[in-house]
Image 1 (spheres, one colour):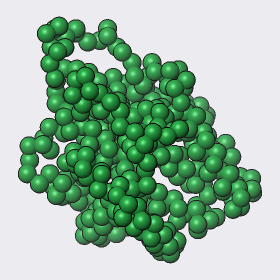
Image 2 (spheres, rainbow, N blue to C red):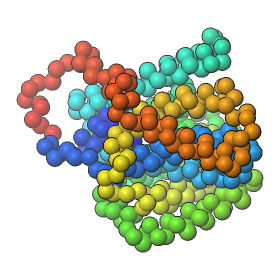
Image 3 (cartoon, rainbow, N blue to C red):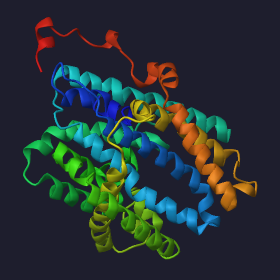
Image 4 (cartoon, one colour):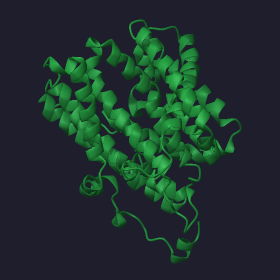
Length: 366
Protein backbone atom coordinates (compact mmCIF):
# COMPACT_ATOMS: atom_id res chain seq x y z
CA UNK A 1 0.00 0.00 0.00
CA UNK A 2 2.65 2.70 -0.68
CA UNK A 3 0.52 3.96 -3.00
CA UNK A 4 -2.38 3.69 -0.70
CA UNK A 5 -0.22 4.79 2.09
CA UNK A 6 2.11 6.53 -0.43
CA UNK A 7 -0.51 8.71 -1.78
CA UNK A 8 -2.10 9.58 1.51
CA UNK A 9 0.86 11.12 2.96
CA UNK A 10 1.27 12.48 -0.33
CA UNK A 11 2.22 7.76 0.21
CA UNK A 12 -0.89 5.71 2.79
CA UNK A 13 -4.29 4.57 -0.57
CA UNK A 14 -1.64 8.46 -0.94
CA UNK A 15 1.90 6.89 1.80
CA UNK A 16 4.97 7.69 -0.76
CA UNK A 17 4.96 11.30 0.25
CA UNK A 18 4.11 10.32 3.82
CA UNK A 19 7.18 8.18 4.06
CA UNK A 20 9.24 10.95 2.54
CA UNK A 21 7.87 13.39 5.07
CA UNK A 22 8.74 11.08 7.94
CA UNK A 23 12.33 10.55 6.82
CA UNK A 24 15.20 12.96 7.25
CA UNK A 25 16.69 14.53 4.10
CA UNK A 26 19.25 12.27 2.50
CA UNK A 27 18.13 9.21 4.48
CA UNK A 28 14.91 8.39 2.71
CA UNK A 29 14.61 4.64 2.56
CA UNK A 30 11.54 2.50 2.23
CA UNK A 31 10.86 0.07 5.06
CA UNK A 32 10.21 -3.43 3.68
CA UNK A 33 7.84 -4.23 6.55
CA UNK A 34 5.40 -1.46 5.66
CA UNK A 35 5.49 -2.23 1.93
CA UNK A 36 4.86 -5.90 2.72
CA UNK A 37 2.00 -5.00 5.03
CA UNK A 38 0.39 -2.75 2.44
CA UNK A 39 0.61 -5.36 -0.28
CA UNK A 40 -0.80 -8.15 1.90
CA UNK A 41 -3.59 -5.87 3.11
CA UNK A 42 -4.60 -4.95 -0.44
CA UNK A 43 -4.70 -8.64 -1.34
CA UNK A 44 -7.10 -9.18 1.58
CA UNK A 45 -9.25 -6.29 0.34
CA UNK A 46 -9.51 -7.91 -3.10
CA UNK A 47 -10.28 -11.31 -1.58
CA UNK A 48 -12.99 -9.78 0.58
CA UNK A 49 -14.65 -8.25 -2.47
CA UNK A 50 -14.40 -11.59 -4.28
CA UNK A 51 -16.08 -13.37 -1.35
CA UNK A 52 -18.97 -10.94 -1.08
CA UNK A 53 -21.18 -12.62 -3.73
CA UNK A 54 -20.49 -16.00 -2.07
CA UNK A 55 -21.72 -15.02 1.38
CA UNK A 56 -25.38 -16.01 0.97
CA UNK A 57 -24.56 -19.58 0.02
CA UNK A 58 -21.50 -20.23 2.17
CA UNK A 59 -21.26 -19.80 5.90
CA UNK A 60 -17.49 -20.37 5.73
CA UNK A 61 -17.07 -17.59 3.14
CA UNK A 62 -19.19 -15.30 5.31
CA UNK A 63 -17.02 -16.03 8.34
CA UNK A 64 -13.80 -15.34 6.44
CA UNK A 65 -15.33 -12.19 4.99
CA UNK A 66 -16.24 -10.83 8.43
CA UNK A 67 -12.84 -11.63 9.94
CA UNK A 68 -11.02 -9.89 7.09
CA UNK A 69 -13.32 -6.87 7.29
CA UNK A 70 -12.57 -6.58 10.99
CA UNK A 71 -8.93 -5.66 10.43
CA UNK A 72 -7.93 -5.02 6.82
CA UNK A 73 -8.99 -1.36 6.71
CA UNK A 74 -7.75 -0.63 10.25
CA UNK A 75 -4.38 -2.09 9.19
CA UNK A 76 -4.26 0.33 6.23
CA UNK A 77 -5.44 3.28 8.26
CA UNK A 78 -3.02 2.81 11.15
CA UNK A 79 -0.10 2.79 8.70
CA UNK A 80 -1.54 5.88 7.02
CA UNK A 81 -1.64 7.65 10.37
CA UNK A 82 1.88 6.51 11.23
CA UNK A 83 3.28 8.09 8.08
CA UNK A 84 1.30 11.26 8.67
CA UNK A 85 3.03 12.08 11.96
CA UNK A 86 5.08 14.91 10.53
CA UNK A 87 2.41 16.39 8.29
CA UNK A 88 2.00 20.13 8.50
CA UNK A 89 0.85 22.76 6.06
CA UNK A 90 4.25 23.33 4.50
CA UNK A 91 3.66 24.05 0.78
CA UNK A 92 5.42 20.97 -0.58
CA UNK A 93 3.46 18.67 1.75
CA UNK A 94 0.16 20.31 0.89
CA UNK A 95 1.04 19.93 -2.78
CA UNK A 96 1.65 16.19 -2.30
CA UNK A 97 -1.64 15.94 -0.44
CA UNK A 98 -3.46 17.48 -3.40
CA UNK A 99 -1.71 15.52 -6.15
CA UNK A 100 -1.52 12.26 -4.21
CA UNK A 101 -5.02 12.12 -2.74
CA UNK A 102 -7.37 14.88 -3.88
CA UNK A 103 -6.70 14.51 -7.60
CA UNK A 104 -6.96 10.68 -7.64
CA UNK A 105 -10.18 11.02 -5.66
CA UNK A 106 -11.71 13.35 -8.23
CA UNK A 107 -10.51 11.30 -11.21
CA UNK A 108 -11.72 7.97 -9.90
CA UNK A 109 -14.95 9.30 -8.44
CA UNK A 110 -15.85 10.55 -11.91
CA UNK A 111 -14.55 7.34 -13.54
CA UNK A 112 -16.54 5.08 -11.22
CA UNK A 113 -19.67 7.16 -11.73
CA UNK A 114 -19.34 6.99 -15.52
CA UNK A 115 -18.69 3.25 -15.31
CA UNK A 116 -21.80 2.88 -13.16
CA UNK A 117 -23.85 4.82 -15.75
CA UNK A 118 -22.57 2.63 -18.58
CA UNK A 119 -22.86 -0.70 -16.77
CA UNK A 120 -26.39 0.04 -15.54
CA UNK A 121 -27.36 1.74 -18.82
CA UNK A 122 -28.68 4.67 -16.81
CA UNK A 123 -27.30 8.05 -18.01
CA UNK A 124 -29.34 9.84 -15.33
CA UNK A 125 -27.12 8.57 -12.50
CA UNK A 126 -25.51 11.64 -10.91
CA UNK A 127 -21.81 12.43 -10.58
CA UNK A 128 -21.23 13.91 -7.15
CA UNK A 129 -17.90 14.61 -5.49
CA UNK A 130 -19.72 14.92 -2.16
CA UNK A 131 -21.03 11.35 -2.16
CA UNK A 132 -18.09 8.95 -2.62
CA UNK A 133 -18.93 5.91 -4.67
CA UNK A 134 -17.59 2.49 -3.76
CA UNK A 135 -13.83 2.56 -3.01
CA UNK A 136 -13.21 6.29 -3.31
CA UNK A 137 -14.45 6.95 0.24
CA UNK A 138 -11.00 5.93 1.50
CA UNK A 139 -9.22 8.66 -0.46
CA UNK A 140 -11.64 11.27 0.81
CA UNK A 141 -11.23 10.01 4.37
CA UNK A 142 -7.42 10.11 4.06
CA UNK A 143 -7.61 13.69 2.87
CA UNK A 144 -9.76 14.74 5.84
CA UNK A 145 -7.69 12.79 8.37
CA UNK A 146 -4.40 14.21 7.15
CA UNK A 147 -5.76 17.74 7.24
CA UNK A 148 -6.57 17.22 10.91
CA UNK A 149 -3.23 15.58 11.80
CA UNK A 150 -1.70 18.75 13.33
CA UNK A 151 -4.69 19.04 15.67
CA UNK A 152 -4.20 15.53 17.05
CA UNK A 153 -0.60 16.35 17.87
CA UNK A 154 -1.77 19.26 20.02
CA UNK A 155 -4.55 17.75 22.09
CA UNK A 156 -4.17 15.61 25.18
CA UNK A 157 -5.31 11.98 25.01
CA UNK A 158 -6.05 12.07 21.26
CA UNK A 159 -7.07 8.41 20.94
CA UNK A 160 -9.80 8.54 23.65
CA UNK A 161 -11.01 11.80 22.10
CA UNK A 162 -11.18 10.20 18.65
CA UNK A 163 -13.09 7.25 20.12
CA UNK A 164 -15.53 9.71 21.68
CA UNK A 165 -16.08 11.35 18.29
CA UNK A 166 -16.59 7.94 16.66
CA UNK A 167 -19.12 7.04 19.37
CA UNK A 168 -21.06 10.24 18.77
CA UNK A 169 -21.06 9.55 15.03
CA UNK A 170 -22.49 6.04 15.42
CA UNK A 171 -25.45 7.36 17.44
CA UNK A 172 -26.14 10.23 15.01
CA UNK A 173 -28.39 9.00 12.17
CA UNK A 174 -28.77 12.53 10.76
CA UNK A 175 -25.16 12.73 9.60
CA UNK A 176 -26.25 11.51 6.17
CA UNK A 177 -24.18 10.29 3.24
CA UNK A 178 -22.35 13.49 2.32
CA UNK A 179 -18.57 12.92 2.28
CA UNK A 180 -19.28 9.46 3.73
CA UNK A 181 -18.84 11.06 7.16
CA UNK A 182 -19.95 7.98 9.09
CA UNK A 183 -16.96 6.06 7.79
CA UNK A 184 -14.63 9.05 8.13
CA UNK A 185 -15.56 9.49 11.80
CA UNK A 186 -15.97 5.83 12.77
CA UNK A 187 -12.55 4.88 11.37
CA UNK A 188 -10.90 8.04 12.76
CA UNK A 189 -9.54 6.38 15.96
CA UNK A 190 -7.34 4.06 13.93
CA UNK A 191 -5.75 6.98 12.07
CA UNK A 192 -5.18 8.87 15.30
CA UNK A 193 -3.67 5.77 16.89
CA UNK A 194 -1.27 5.53 13.93
CA UNK A 195 -0.23 9.13 14.55
CA UNK A 196 0.76 8.18 18.10
CA UNK A 197 2.71 5.03 17.27
CA UNK A 198 6.49 4.80 17.17
CA UNK A 199 8.77 2.28 15.41
CA UNK A 200 9.22 0.29 18.60
CA UNK A 201 5.48 -0.39 18.79
CA UNK A 202 5.62 -2.22 15.46
CA UNK A 203 8.71 -4.08 16.63
CA UNK A 204 6.86 -5.34 19.70
CA UNK A 205 3.97 -6.88 17.76
CA UNK A 206 6.46 -8.61 15.45
CA UNK A 207 8.09 -10.54 18.27
CA UNK A 208 8.18 -14.34 18.20
CA UNK A 209 5.75 -14.63 21.13
CA UNK A 210 3.16 -12.46 19.41
CA UNK A 211 3.50 -14.49 16.19
CA UNK A 212 2.80 -17.66 18.13
CA UNK A 213 -0.16 -16.14 20.01
CA UNK A 214 -1.62 -14.83 16.73
CA UNK A 215 -2.37 -18.39 15.59
CA UNK A 216 -4.90 -19.29 18.35
CA UNK A 217 -6.29 -15.73 18.26
CA UNK A 218 -7.13 -15.99 14.57
CA UNK A 219 -8.42 -19.56 15.00
CA UNK A 220 -10.73 -18.49 17.82
CA UNK A 221 -11.87 -15.46 15.81
CA UNK A 222 -12.75 -17.62 12.81
CA UNK A 223 -14.68 -20.03 15.03
CA UNK A 224 -16.59 -17.17 16.64
CA UNK A 225 -17.28 -15.57 13.24
CA UNK A 226 -18.63 -18.89 11.92
CA UNK A 227 -21.05 -18.96 14.86
CA UNK A 228 -21.91 -15.25 14.70
CA UNK A 229 -22.65 -14.76 10.99
CA UNK A 230 -26.15 -16.18 11.37
CA UNK A 231 -26.82 -14.32 14.63
CA UNK A 232 -25.36 -10.82 14.21
CA UNK A 233 -25.90 -7.90 11.87
CA UNK A 234 -22.63 -7.92 9.97
CA UNK A 235 -23.18 -4.33 8.77
CA UNK A 236 -21.54 -3.18 12.02
CA UNK A 237 -18.18 -4.15 10.55
CA UNK A 238 -18.55 -1.76 7.60
CA UNK A 239 -18.71 1.36 9.83
CA UNK A 240 -21.01 3.17 7.41
CA UNK A 241 -24.30 3.32 9.34
CA UNK A 242 -25.54 4.60 12.67
CA UNK A 243 -26.89 2.26 15.32
CA UNK A 244 -30.44 3.44 14.66
CA UNK A 245 -30.09 2.76 10.93
CA UNK A 246 -29.06 -0.79 11.82
CA UNK A 247 -32.20 -1.23 13.91
CA UNK A 248 -30.36 -1.16 17.24
CA UNK A 249 -30.81 1.10 20.29
CA UNK A 250 -28.54 4.15 20.34
CA UNK A 251 -26.56 3.03 23.37
CA UNK A 252 -25.51 -0.17 21.60
CA UNK A 253 -23.66 1.98 19.08
CA UNK A 254 -21.34 3.25 21.80
CA UNK A 255 -20.68 -0.27 23.08
CA UNK A 256 -20.03 -1.56 19.56
CA UNK A 257 -17.64 1.31 18.81
CA UNK A 258 -15.37 0.31 21.68
CA UNK A 259 -15.84 -3.44 21.16
CA UNK A 260 -15.04 -3.29 17.46
CA UNK A 261 -12.08 -0.99 18.07
CA UNK A 262 -10.65 -3.53 20.49
CA UNK A 263 -11.31 -6.51 18.20
CA UNK A 264 -9.92 -4.73 15.16
CA UNK A 265 -6.83 -3.63 17.04
CA UNK A 266 -6.17 -7.17 18.30
CA UNK A 267 -6.49 -8.72 14.84
CA UNK A 268 -4.46 -5.94 13.26
CA UNK A 269 -1.65 -6.63 15.72
CA UNK A 270 -1.83 -10.33 14.82
CA UNK A 271 -1.73 -9.44 11.13
CA UNK A 272 1.32 -7.21 11.60
CA UNK A 273 2.99 -10.03 13.57
CA UNK A 274 2.84 -12.25 10.49
CA UNK A 275 4.05 -9.62 8.01
CA UNK A 276 7.68 -10.31 7.05
CA UNK A 277 10.14 -7.56 7.84
CA UNK A 278 12.66 -8.56 5.15
CA UNK A 279 12.47 -7.87 1.44
CA UNK A 280 10.41 -10.45 -0.44
CA UNK A 281 9.25 -10.93 -4.02
CA UNK A 282 6.19 -8.78 -3.30
CA UNK A 283 7.87 -5.96 -1.35
CA UNK A 284 8.17 -3.75 -4.43
CA UNK A 285 4.44 -4.16 -5.05
CA UNK A 286 3.75 -2.26 -1.83
CA UNK A 287 4.49 0.92 -3.76
CA UNK A 288 1.58 0.23 -6.11
CA UNK A 289 -1.27 -0.45 -3.77
CA UNK A 290 -3.27 2.65 -4.62
CA UNK A 291 -3.26 1.51 -8.22
CA UNK A 292 -4.38 -2.00 -7.29
CA UNK A 293 -6.95 -0.70 -4.83
CA UNK A 294 -8.70 1.64 -7.23
CA UNK A 295 -8.48 -0.44 -10.41
CA UNK A 296 -9.67 -3.74 -8.96
CA UNK A 297 -12.90 -2.00 -7.98
CA UNK A 298 -13.99 -1.93 -11.63
CA UNK A 299 -13.62 -5.71 -11.81
CA UNK A 300 -15.38 -6.24 -8.48
CA UNK A 301 -18.32 -4.17 -9.69
CA UNK A 302 -18.33 -5.93 -13.06
CA UNK A 303 -18.74 -9.28 -11.31
CA UNK A 304 -22.12 -8.29 -9.91
CA UNK A 305 -23.21 -6.20 -12.89
CA UNK A 306 -22.65 -8.98 -15.38
CA UNK A 307 -23.54 -11.89 -13.08
CA UNK A 308 -20.17 -13.60 -13.12
CA UNK A 309 -21.20 -15.62 -10.08
CA UNK A 310 -24.42 -17.00 -11.56
CA UNK A 311 -22.70 -20.21 -12.58
CA UNK A 312 -22.75 -22.96 -9.98
CA UNK A 313 -19.03 -23.73 -9.76
CA UNK A 314 -17.91 -20.56 -7.90
CA UNK A 315 -20.21 -21.53 -5.02
CA UNK A 316 -18.56 -24.91 -4.47
CA UNK A 317 -15.51 -25.24 -2.18
CA UNK A 318 -13.10 -25.69 -5.07
CA UNK A 319 -14.70 -22.77 -6.90
CA UNK A 320 -14.36 -20.53 -3.84
CA UNK A 321 -10.65 -21.33 -3.71
CA UNK A 322 -10.26 -20.53 -7.41
CA UNK A 323 -12.12 -17.23 -6.98
CA UNK A 324 -9.85 -16.33 -4.06
CA UNK A 325 -6.67 -17.12 -6.00
CA UNK A 326 -7.87 -15.19 -9.06
CA UNK A 327 -8.65 -12.13 -6.92
CA UNK A 328 -5.18 -12.26 -5.35
CA UNK A 329 -3.51 -12.68 -8.75
CA UNK A 330 -5.45 -9.84 -10.38
CA UNK A 331 -4.78 -7.29 -7.65
CA UNK A 332 -1.11 -8.34 -7.64
CA UNK A 333 -0.92 -7.66 -11.36
CA UNK A 334 -2.57 -4.26 -10.88
CA UNK A 335 0.10 -3.29 -8.32
CA UNK A 336 3.01 -3.93 -10.70
CA UNK A 337 5.23 -1.08 -11.99
CA UNK A 338 4.04 -1.27 -15.64
CA UNK A 339 0.42 -0.72 -14.55
CA UNK A 340 1.52 2.07 -12.22
CA UNK A 341 3.29 3.81 -15.09
CA UNK A 342 0.21 3.65 -17.29
CA UNK A 343 -1.98 5.29 -14.64
CA UNK A 344 0.57 7.69 -13.20
CA UNK A 345 -1.22 10.59 -14.90
CA UNK A 346 -4.17 10.01 -12.54
CA UNK A 347 -2.47 8.66 -9.43
CA UNK A 348 0.74 10.71 -9.23
CA UNK A 349 0.31 13.74 -11.50
CA UNK A 350 3.08 16.33 -11.41
CA UNK A 351 0.73 19.27 -12.07
CA UNK A 352 3.60 21.75 -12.13
CA UNK A 353 1.33 24.10 -14.06
CA UNK A 354 -1.02 24.39 -11.08
CA UNK A 355 1.47 25.41 -8.40
CA UNK A 356 3.82 28.29 -7.78
CA UNK A 357 7.51 27.50 -7.79
CA UNK A 358 8.96 27.33 -4.31
CA UNK A 359 11.89 29.66 -3.51
CA UNK A 360 15.24 27.94 -4.00
CA UNK A 361 16.20 28.61 -0.38
CA UNK A 362 13.28 26.49 0.83
CA UNK A 363 14.45 23.33 -0.93
CA UNK A 364 17.24 22.76 1.59
CA UNK A 365 14.99 23.05 4.62
CA UNK A 366 12.93 20.32 6.25
